[in-house]
Amino acid sequence: MECIVMKDDIFRQKEYHYEKDFEQAVIDNYKYIFGEDTVYIDIKKRIGENIVTIPGGYLLDFSFAASPRLYIIENELSIHDAYKHIGSQLLKFAVSYKASGREIKKYILDYISRTENKEAFIESKLSVAGYRNIDALLESLIFEKPVSAIVVIDNSSSELENVLGNLTMKTDIIEFKTFQNRSGELMHKFVPFNDEIKEYRLLNMERKGESNVDIDDIDTIVVPAQEDGFQHAFIESNAWWQIRISSSMLEKIKYIAAYRTAPVSAITHVAEVQRIEKYKDTNKYILIFKAPAREIHHIKLDVGGRGKAPQSARYTNYKKLMSAQNLSDVF
Image 1 (cartoon, rainbow, N blue to C red):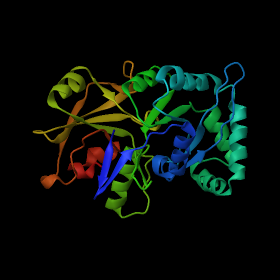
Image 2: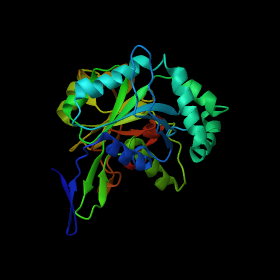
Image 3: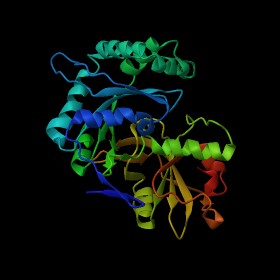
Image 4: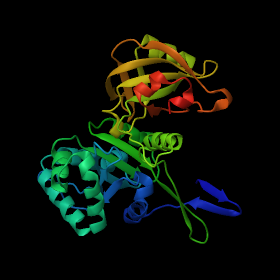
């Protein structure tokens, strides 16, 4: 069992015995988990006729102001069977979603109209997104865009990854753990949804000194690569694989760049992405290049480590990448 020590106090991982308690913890903290530009739709209604399912909730995400998204939310406990319970629930929803679109739209509209603060928040986002009203927004998100899901779970596993990897529906996983001390105080541990995107925004806000930064221009993913992997995958195979990408980024990535770790310590090659596919039976992806990667002027790690070397995939803009002199200019 995991523990967190703070001074002389020990917080031990809390085991949730009831899904409703876990779900309430997620709802109470949804702005931290999913971000300030989201609205959690807490409704549980049966959808479907031949195949009936009850989603845990929905999420309206305005992280990309010009292209909002709607997600199905499944709040799950790891004690549930990944195949029979979680996988089955998501498969049923994927099958029932389009046919139940009118029901879903009605449920969400009713919920929004009863929560004044959420209605006002959504309306404040409509003009940038290009919709005349909330009805038009939902019409587009439900009927014109592919459905995606987010599974929030107390303990993730490779088994769950494999199950979701076999679904055609794009699915993200957020591991949300709660820790409690003897006094009953709680701590929650999680990686926020779209964390890499939020990092891009924060770094650019700090650099530009602006209160907000447009992230709709993100179109490039930068991956750290050791020499063997770089030669085999990036150069010889014209691809890069087994990479975790949030579903909101899949349609935005147009380029991939390789940051070669020490002793090179620089971004040296870039390639245009032809397509992105699920990687084998996993919830990760493979990026297949349109043409062989080309070498660019080496964008080196700053002297003294300013603009720290990426330890995992990070996002940027292609024009910014190509005009950068040092790594700190990229992110």
